[in-house]
Image (tube, rainbow over all chains, first blue to last red; front, side, top):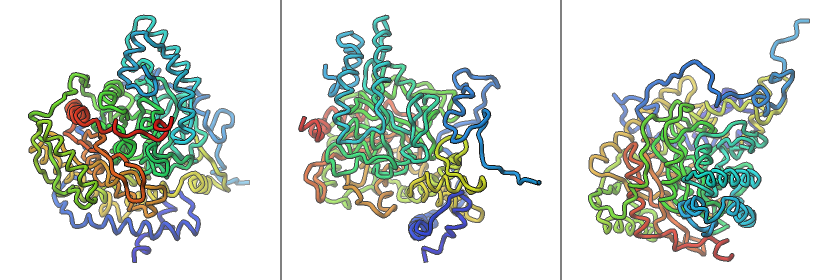
Length: 100
Length: 493
């Protein structure tokens, strides 16, 4: 059954996305339907076909390792949109356990 | 000169000739847009003070002897493009209070060319959608029937230009997000070749497909905007380093010697007799201009949607990983950093974005990567090869831009039925080709009371923007479909 094709709780964990029970109930069948829809790709012969990451001929681009004035972001601007900034840094919940 | 209705070309010429000042244009446009937008809701934010400041600067430059290609042209900016000092939301709760600290290259080039920023336009959240309804912030209406959607994802940019609340606007197109709303709103929407317009400052959705392009009411204005926006930018590593020839000289008025391909697999009979008639007439009009109309085959195009709905979500799941509540945007606190991420993203993203993150994460996850993501990338190769073969027999491919005219709100509750709107645009995007939608007629949709515009999609080989705009110009000048309809606000003004 389409609903069971995807372990939505596991995928949500990988995606760092908390889902409500309602969302799981709604998204499960919708994603199952979408997977059924993309199944038609199986009938397309792709043996000996290379995978296209990007269609326009391109090569790796490197630049000189120098500061570009036009892309310089001030410390204040870099922190301007921070939800929580302290002492000039982005502040996050503690990630190392307290040993005491 | 009418700053509301005239073309960008006419406005710029008048300002450069100092027949009218950019400041006068701003003072005429600001109250007009505020009034029109009270029913359209195309804009998330109006920036009258920035518009006035830019107008002063344009007037100073013109007074100093400069000629600017977009002098005094009112411009709307899709709100997934950074513009310093404005909120840049991507239509999402997660960025509802994000203020841009730099400006996208494409936007900067338009402003440097003399365009005046009216404001930032609504969009489907993170540019994911085909109706505008996925915006978490606003419901934009179609200027030709307020009870219908404007299309998406560049909903507000298309509605603003179609509703005479902007002269030109910026859009971004990943699978049809410029072309489909252009068709719905009776305007020209142009997606250049992948890499032609810098994506620096564009909030990323699917990086191998995203491309910025203009909306305008004429092909000539779209070409004018493209000439300014396009070209290499060292700040975008995928920006193509090829010279950009000005398109002005390519805007032809006939199609003699041009082979137009009509795709066998895109037969329009199943779209209903009224829509079919619009496209049969369009193909006949192309022939009447001197084109040789030939049938071409794209046998793998029908796999375009399935291919796209693996590749685009996969790339989106990766791109949107950056929204974690640490550096910018919404944060919902939790007992540890992991829960903070999960709660922030749960509260900040809307349902369509969540669906795409989930399907993309699944397609990239261990055990499924080859079966889904790599398979889709191989299908993409086959689709691009089909187009290359078709272009051995024709110079440009003509097709519908969308499967129907604009539909009513809440008409597409099932995600896959919404995805089908982009049946004709998605294969072109996967192949990276330049393409545009140009108005080609109107039909009264089922349940509707007014004729709604339709768009003709034209697509041509990589890097042939000049030729493509030339073909579209010839068709537009011979048919002038856009002028046959009036948006509701203008009709009743």
